Length: 166
Image (cartoon, rainbow, N blue to C red):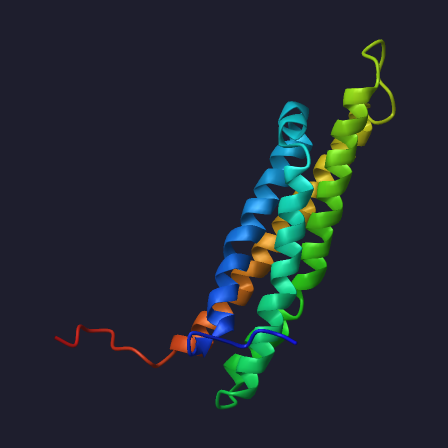
């Protein structure tokens, strides 16, 4: 069962705003925490919790979007938007997985004595995680932009006047 209509309007229109906000917010938080270990320790479980909420919002928006696609006239722009939207879930999963790894590294670094670096605190490992975090965060944000742009075109192209109507 999915939520398709809220207050008489398609739920997709509301749910996409969660995705538009949460994907970049999660991406930024993951990057900061991957690069700056103290931030990761301060964020604690909030980081993977944020990424989990982000992950949950994607199928919610996608399912509501699939319902909406069946209830609007068919056109190539709507189809393109739906196809692009289907590709966001792997990026959201990647954000969640990396957030858990970053949190786990910070947690492990906290519990190890400061007498010497362990493999968790080693520079090559931290650099590798930071590069992975950057790649996934960038991919997710770019994908959200592409999906949003195609959705905007599908909803608004040729449906407004370039000059004021008053």
